[in-house]
Length: 223
Image (cartoon, rainbow, N blue to C red; front, top):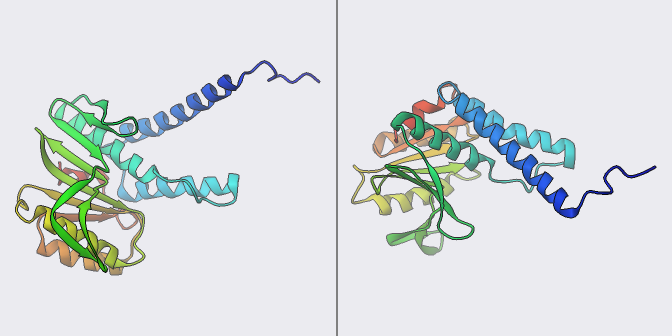
């Protein structure tokens, strides 16, 4: 029997895969855009974990696949700002592998390293850098930071992270907002986060699996 794919070149295979994956990401992006005003935080959490449950049917487990959490949040932010402020974003290069989004009035960076004004002790070491998951700038001024975690094995991880932000923002707490997004948390973690939120007006958080509120409500507070 003749192999029906015998005339397909290796480049054809590569191109087909690229098209398939680009279409896959575009459809997810369209889903986010079409449901911007009504998608709930809990639904975003379900979308994230749905991918991993589906992967188990193809490879037996879900290890080794990362990036979806940031993808969901970044694309939501871009569509939100585009709609609310009538912006048009372009993707521009910083390096070959690092890019950022620029519109008429906004700039969005992903995992940009920032040097702290002074070192922060984390464990037994002093650290002088922080790498926010998302940085939002308006008129070339930073207005918001977003940190994304899937879950917290130890609350000290967040405490160490907050130490860095306290140093970063100590002279500008009235100008910036920090939104901490946790995909999967429990009541104990939420209680600790609530206490910190009450003491710090620049800090806000959302635990996605614990909220049926619209995700746009959380974003409204920082942009």
